[in-house]
Image (cartoon, rainbow, N blue to C red; front, top):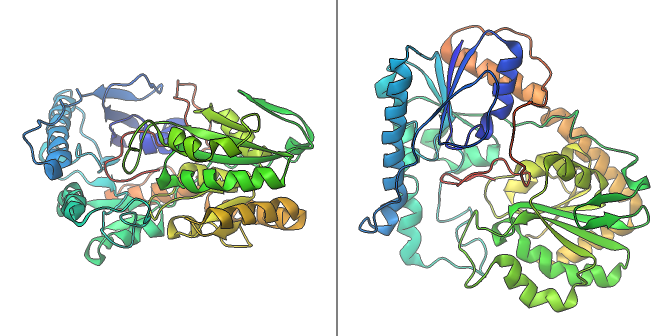
Length: 439
């Protein structure tokens, strides 16, 4: 089959399916993207220039939409060049968040599109005004609703959609859901797997060294910010460190802003350190920045308590990876997390904004080896049943066959590490600028 993938940061969400198609052979794959250094042998990468910044004259609530229209124009031009070279895809697969897909029906009429619908913006029941510490004034509600402009245009194409979780699917209006299929993203269970020996040996990653007699608390986010519960975690640390002298903390993530507003000054890390830094031993709390994927997995395998918090928003890949390695997960009580973490079964659940409760839950997990073993085993079992990358690829291929009406080769090759250069991540996917939500 002939595939045209579209994502502004190649390969984006499509790393695994593209690898699988390459391993199978017999397919032609073209990937349209903004310029970056990532390469995959066997993929024809076609780039388009990133549109210039939106003019200040555009209304603030419409600037994101204006940029999406510019990206749609750039995507149209890129697709015209692809067609001029004689390439006619059987299916177009891409992310709807930034607008590049919107005009491709005019270049390739009749070619089905499978678009990634990541999040539908609302002013209640999701991230907006979830945290009373950071209220959004009513006059900004219109700007939130306007962020659905691309969503609505994408749905109006009357094509096909996918989203990775039931929670994300439910954020969309009932009238839109019938066009969106839940394709649950998986992880490579051969790479993300428990390491029974991890607690019996010393581990060194960057500035952190932890021995067998110490306890490791891990926290991972693309960037350290309230949307991922960074403020709750930081405020819980003084009580945890005071109660347990054997605890070491690994905090993985950058200092930029992926979601929500920037702090009044500096970074969210500097803001929280100014608040609680005098009660935190810097020799026991390590801010790791972004780490290589292999080190990220090692930290999760060694973790005695992995804290994953989120506003009602999009779940990160790191949560799936933590469950797959059998890390004892402490999750927030938002549906984003509880779709994966069942209290006492696949992890422990505690209130998202209550740092005292987080501290108590963490100490309970560290003190109770039987409980830790139970939720660790439950996490791995859940991952095997629900997050297997091979199963995800089978479902993905079935959806492609349904949409195109064309049969693909039935065998799914085991996923393999690409020889191509890939960026180190947090482990965040999905790294990229978010326009329609992401982890």
